Length: 225
View (tube, rainbow, N blue to C red):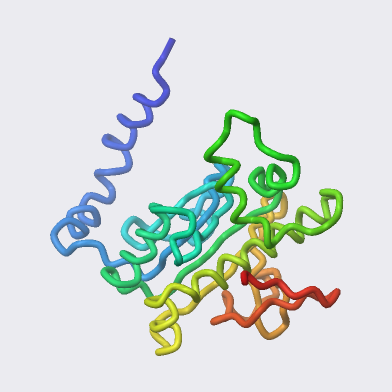
């Protein structure tokens, strides 16, 4: 039985790398200087480089279940996502932070339906979505709204990180909330002024921030506090 992963590794080395060798060598010689921190869900259908058209060295990536941002008060203990945010803002001096959720998100559905008993860490992690959940049965519309509410919740949590708030208020950092609709191939960007997600094909920008508490069209206020 052929080893598919080994074949892919060999193809990268023999086919892709020679065409881009100089780019990789420059990234070693000059170091990485990404302008964007991309916080995305771990879902295999979400591919940041495809969505953004980015090349190696352009995105600093954080992937976790649900694209969640832990509170800065460390109430959820030590966490790699928090460390990555600090490193991206303080050391890499990124100019943009994107939080990208997506349609048909397993994390959001599981937050409603519950995780297996053995998934102790997952159960604790999904509590980060509690403020985004709606007091309804998880219909397709409710799940879609919750996915988008969760993105905004993470943007609000980001503003509790002192280094993020400081850079954002100084005009050195912008925050972008995205919701990728897989079946449509369309990213919807959060517009703070409209209080809504707008298809990128119709939007006038890639997202705005910083963000006041999010007021939905039905009057609900989403706030992490």
